[in-house]
Length: 150
Length: 286
Length: 172
Image (cartoon, rainbow over the protein chains, first blue to last red):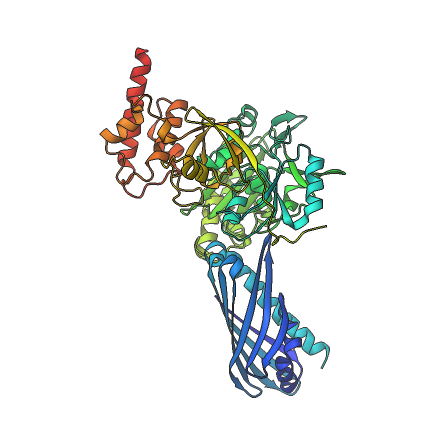
């Protein structure tokens, strides 16, 4: 599943860039994401993705690897984790692009989300809807945090 | 295989409600189990206790009482198909029930369980939406009537509180009107379901009342008021001319997304086709 | 108040007294034991099969108090005080039921995996409706899936058996 979003943030590119690397503040913008930690600054992080649809709960402990980054312009990260209780695996490839000048930054988000295993066969459309929701809330939270506190 | 669980068998609504309060998320109501046991077998949910409510008496009857048809939540789909009261007053409902899943699911599965599990790809909810049904939810301290429009929150989620049991479905008897429910799918569960009810007025020449509901395509069944408004008050000829537009509105309102059941465009198209056919059938029957 | 749902439940035993193919049994079962496993593994009646395991294929069909159920998704305790009929209980004193005979004569099975469920469901159909139309038959049997025959021979077998059974009833 692929999701793309572009949001305009009233803040400088530098502040946005700095925010993106502040693990705790960044992860706080992702709904369902908890327990963020830095394994190797700039390279490897960890977090847990918890989601609920009706009575169904999933918890994916994620390993996040930063595979590419260009100062003030671009980050590409890969996240992966398994929830053995439901025999499923989550893989996310996230690309973040920054553009803009002065106090106006355009943040482009592109996510490739794959759910493998039981959840995928049984709940494809539910997952898609949920992932869409997460992306939307994430984008809004980023915007809010970055415009609220400069 | 099923993970080990403990069985509770209360024989009153109050006792069942107490158990729900006592065990919270670790327990779940169990009736036919035709949805619940499947997801438990898959390991997608785990419950330490199942509360078998089939011992509670008088929850599976179909009765006609003061202007309403009362359907007990524990009535199985099969019991509904052979109910003389339902066959006489709501043949469209009987026909829908007679085509739920397969003969074995109909034998064991209950209408209450179907509604409460709120699986998106299901039939009864969509039809109940055009029938103006009320759902009775009971707990230790009393009961309340929930309009069916408010019942389904999201996929697998209803507005029932954690200590409530669905006990009854009440359908107001409609004196004049034609109802049709049509569904489409080639997988095990329906991919698209459409219900239409029309009441004729003006000497049988115009649409006094129109109800349109879509299900299965989106996360929960819903009425499409915008499509209904297009037809209400129009002559039958005018409404027939507008039905494709109404169907298009219903399709877009269905919250369909592309998945194994079909692409979003395809599902929206099927909704439109079924709305047209169901409308024609409903008008003919009224 | 609420206990964590990941905590393992304590073992519980339920007394299951029921009749299978006319014979009484008294067993102890746990709540999560499925009827199919009790019938197959504890009673050795392996005619009913686990095939899809999600109650859509009908290979696990049993008649419980004369009504069709998916034994793969029914807890065994639901059979308390009830009568179970499996395919093994259909023949009487070594004489095959007309349906069994018809399936043999008309080629109603190939691998035979769906057959016990097919025959039990067809038996119920003919008990309720001795002269079904093909449409009525197909609607009734919709939940019994066959991967081998393409269904034509199954329909023929059932209609042939129905004809024989009606004739026998007239003579009786």
